[in-house]
Image (cartoon, rainbow, N blue to C red; front, side):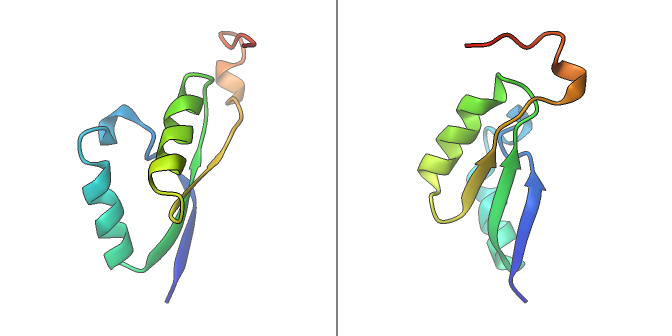
Length: 75
């Protein structure tokens, strides 16, 4: 079975040191693509970076979680 994970947060700092291992393990389990979901403006850059490093695997959605709207500022 091929799986597309439609809501991931590989952009989280918790995965910073081992994101490549996490991606390889996901692929071994049948995941063919992931969609990293932004939740703050600060997460945009890391999602963009992951999409560049893994263009056939990582995609991004860009938005701000409602709980973060009071601290979000336009760029």
